[in-house]
Structure formats: C-alpha cells, structure tokens
Image 1 (cartoon, one colour):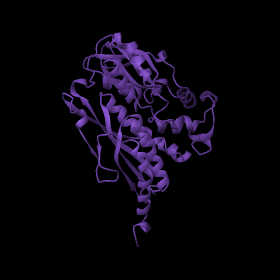
Image 2 (cartoon, helix red, strand yellow; image 1 turned 180 degrees about the vertical axis):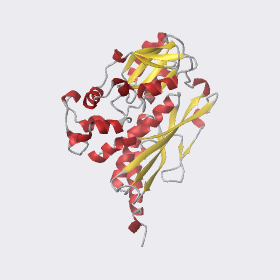
Image 3 (cartoon, rainbow, N blue to C red; image 1 turned 135 degrees about the vertical axis):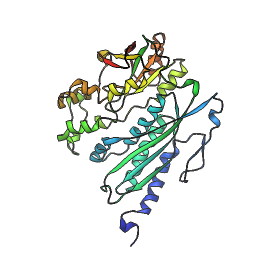
Length: 344
C-alpha cells in the first residue's frame, strides 16, 4: 500500500509544479524575493516606503460554478483569469494596487497538464493586473471530488496610501457615475445561466452558435474571461481624476453592489439605456423569460465597474479609461436620498 494507491500521485504533483513554473516566472515583480517552490512567498516593501501611510488591502474569491463550463469544454486556461479578476477588481475599488497573488486548486485527480493550464490562466490574470504570482497550492482530493473536477480560488494583497483610499465619503448630489464595460457575464450568476441554457450544457451543446451572438458559440461567449480594471484605475490616477467611489458589479448585480459604495443619505440613479448591453444578456433574458429586475439583481448586464467622479472630470475619466483599453460611459448620477440605487 502506498499514497498513489490511495489516490494521491506525488509524482504528478512534482510534474505539475515543473510545468507551471514557466507561467509563474512571467508574473514576477522586482519586489519578489526568493524562487518558486518555497514554503512561502516573500515580497519586499521597499517600493512603497515613500507613501505617507502605506495601507494593505486584501481580497479573496473564487470562480464559482463557471468552472462547470470549463469541465464540459475541456478548456482550462481562462478560468484562472476570472479568479484573479474577482480578487484584484475588488481591491481596486478601494484604490489599491495589487502586489501579489496566491491561488488554491483542489482537484479530484492531479493531471499535470490540466493543472498547468489552469495556472497559465492565473498567470495571465496576474500579468494583466501587474501582480506577482508568488505562491499557491494544488490539493488532490480522491474520494471527495470526481477525478475530472476541480475548484479554484485565490487571494491577493495590494497597497494604497491611506489618503488615497476610495471610500465614498466625499460623494455629493450631482456627481457623475461612469460605467466601465464588461466582457460579458464575467464570473457571477452561472447557476442561473446553466439553468437557462440547461439543454446546451453538454460538450456538443456548448458549440451551438447563435445569430444573436454574432455567430459565436454559446460556450465561447460564456467562458469569456472577466475584465480586469486595474490598468483603468492606474490611468485614472495618472490623469488626475479623483475616483470618489467605486463598485465592482459581481454577484447581486446592481442592486446589491452599487449601494456598497454609497454613504448614508446618497442614492445612485442609473440610466439603463445609457450604454450598449452585450447581446448575451438579452439572449439570457429572452431564453429564460427572466424579469428585468432579476437580471439587474443577478448579472452585471454589461457594466463591470461603476465609478463616481466630479462632473467636471467625467470626460477625463472616460478618456483615461479608454487609454487603458476600456469602454466607458456616463450611466447616471448621485442624488440625495435614502441609500440605494434606482435603475430608470
């Protein structure tokens, strides 16, 4: 009797590490100390010693049931981007610059090539957010998970000068809401997505193309990675735009997430027709006969990040976001009133 006969292949674990090293190396920053494969990751604080009050911000999240599509399509190199995005976008909302990231993969069976593909996506997400992948863990769980399945989660740490923390405290009546376009469904609401498209949830079914999607397959459209907005925030800061408040539109859609950026006595008013909604959301609504309130209460409906800025800086904010490759729209404003959001 040995560990392999019990379902844990140590040699496969070694091979996974070797295969993923080439991707991890591409994410390194000068502050990273030590090599790959240690018991912990070390990161120097020298680069932010110049801040008045350097403040660490952190976030953790996973990919959720979107990974079910990765299983069905046998495509594993994009969900890692989602995992990073869900974490770094959250700390960007506080004005934080992501510094480093750690991932955790739990799998039924360690298939080195599959694990390496997952980490390739994580590394790509880290590169898109200028964040170093300094550690992680792959845990083989025989008997607990089916051999072909895995779960993926991550954790990130960033830094912001205390005076630059985005808190929403200075919001005032008349401030402008700028929306940054999403790339699609991102990584939330997939339990409902899979229910709506239940008959297509097979390897062949996900290859189905729809005219509404411009001829793209359903699987490719749904597996499109979450947009990372870190560079947009950097461009905004470089342009001198003060982001007063920010909300990452994730699970719970507009109704749950937008109020999180508001202080008491302030209300967000969002105009639903102020931007172009990606066609996947109309297809979801029509196919599932979903009430539009539920749509906005579940999905990002085309806006992945909402920013509040002074009206005089609205044009500069849109220009800065565009410089980072993001489509941006004025989608509403802040008003006095009970804390909450109105979609009109």
